[in-house]
Length: 325
Length: 291
Image (cartoon, rainbow over all chains, first blue to last red):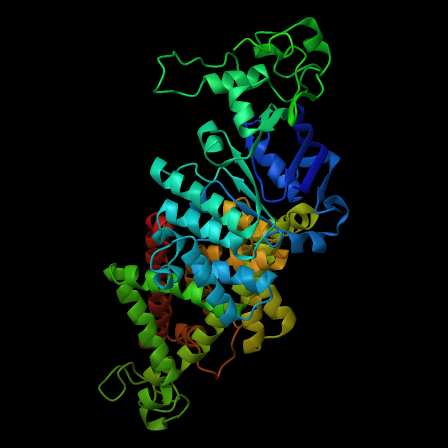
């Protein structure tokens, strides 16, 4: 598979009175064509900021300090705002985490989709409407003709999310940024939405970057997983590899904290919390919570190294703890 | 674009209409406005006499069956004059409101969305304008521009622009942070579309309330300007002008010449205020979720 998106050395700061919040700190990430990459991490670990940075939609007080995003061989940073605008929604689409509030309350859902088609695909009103109905059917909204004429408040949360997905996929984007697409939906609906995403991406060949804090969601649909902690990517591996052989202590802890019904284990919460991102310490940002911590971890930041083919991890201690689980 | 703007605002209006019917006082007030407007439009058919037809034999008659609201010193029928005067009064009040809503709403939307130094400067200008007594400002402008009907409308609208500007800007500051604004950005909408098509229609309900209340105030301002001789000029029939003419005759006992134009002003302003209050009640807070 060839690379579709390549993020290198991306850093995003948010300027506040007390200093700069280093929300995303020198991350490197690659998404291949057609794959589903999970971006996992706790709240505040920089997952959503990363997806906004890809679209170049970080607004003040936020600022992209360094880094470079290559999409389909093009450096997005070098585009003019007008060129960037034509990529948003057309080649890179986004499904946001709260479908209810991400839809405009004064426009019918059908209009919101057909507007987009007219904007990007240059369709006439009639063609756009036809394609809009097709999309609604594709995301399995029952009675699409009726639903298209309704306002977001008249639809359920799951229905709104389907509309969002229909909207995101309407222009056949090459990359879909799904920011916690199942948050706030109940489990059975969430599972259906995930199936739908997987199926549609397979059908259209779109790659998906799935931002989530839920490892269950990751296990469901992702090919590869990147784990973020405090603005840094600490581990990146194929999905099965990550679940079976997590290398980073944080990933191990995350995996251990998944409730299981088949084994009688006591859930272990991860001690401590994400460190303050305002002027964080120079070393590993997980050092304060880590059971393997050594002096080296506190002074210098561990680089991403290969733990196995296709599996990278940023930890000084993973070699010696390789077999400990 | 214009078509979809119309569709989205018309649904909000339908909802407002349904709710308004449940509030008897506001509904009655709305009926009064419609009644006055209809009478004004069909004035030549409704009014029993021509507004400036003099009749020397019937000067200064008190209210009677022939002249229900009496006559003035030239024998002009008061009722007919009041009905014809509604044309000027309503047209100026609506025009002034429309100009002010359009300019204030658009500027407020742009400034609120863009923020930055232009917004800072404009808001300080608005503060200054609002600190200045509106009526004195309107007096100054009509005195400066000359007192034609158009100029009176312009003067009144200038005094009202700051209120709409501030209201829309405030709403915009809130709306620009909403997720659907983010969503509109993530799908690559140009800024003008985000402001005009996605966000501005969401400001409409509070703007409509403000506009309704302000129409009553515009009417009052205009009558006051005319009363002190700066607005509409006699012999044009206008409520403020008529009240001014009638005021001098209270001492000689012709009370109807002052009372009825005054009542016309009071009833219309009250009606606009009641409708505005009713709209505000039903928009806040229940309307939010339903819209």
